[in-house]
Image (tube, rainbow, N blue to C red; front, side, top):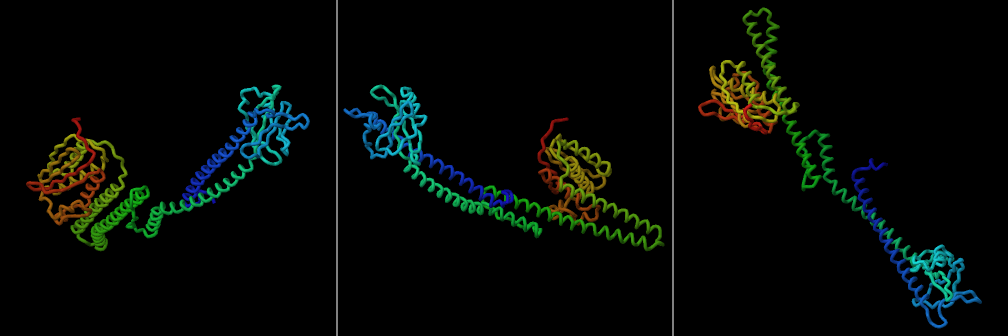
Length: 468
């Protein structure tokens, strides 16, 4: 199984364990190097001290020399720290002279030959260290130049076995491996515990998502506490569910209201058509009356369907926003309203105003306000339209809206008792409200002084513009 196929919790646990394992292995390696250098450094210091003791012997009859009869190296003082050293001389030809107490001979290394041949060279004055093997055992060797009474240069080699150092390093290595293995195991356990705790909100989110997908219940919510990323994710998911729930509620309400509103004209239209189809001997005047009713009902249904489409389209906001001169747009809408309602006088006060929005939807909202005002105005009545600071105000001089109806005039399909005698679907002002909210604003209605109704459409993001 590849790493990508593992669960997120397993991957998080493995990553945590791998990170700790890498840190433990790196720390163990550093500790090993420090201990190794420390132990070998102590051996090197002891070898240097031993070589200086041998070189500095100055007593009568003492000092390094080679016995001509036996060929052994003599004059080597006993070590002051307990023995265990290996001492020999190497000449420039590579011949080694050991003491009679040594059981073997160090190999004449390249370092020993260089020191013996170039002992006066400052490069070798302080000696050189290297490793060598004698009888299957590893030794640490210190080589330093010396001279006899005739001025011949030799390489003095002092060696000490590294068995104790290697034994100690072996134990340290085993201990570090055990510590690393234990650390990795503990890291895996802690990684698993941390991943379970950290992913608890994700599991709750997953269960909630699966439950919503299975039951289609958008009222499901996730407990969100704290300010961390996962808590904010849960809060965002709750916000999304709330928006979806509200959207679904509005959709269901729209379908319910639309079906209710369409049922009456459809029933009446069907009845009239059945009467026309059944009674072929109907007098001409009655037939003409029924046909006029059918045409009127079809017109109402067409208007209702059109407004339903506008309402649904406004919820999706398919059009992109752009810079809009609100005063010029309102002036165009007023011009059309004058043609549609010649019995009403429109008076305008349009201050230059710019905003960022969708011109078609804004024009539809303003048109609905003007249609509503004209519908309630008596013949020869006046409708006052003003634009200022991103607000469109429309005031009519009709009978006004009752106080009990004011809170509901912008609800879908709401029609006040006095408005049920007039043509309309009850969606025009709902579209105005939708457009206002889509542009970050709002809409309100109030009874005007002296009679009539004043409606205010507020659109955010507007700036006053200078005269064009």
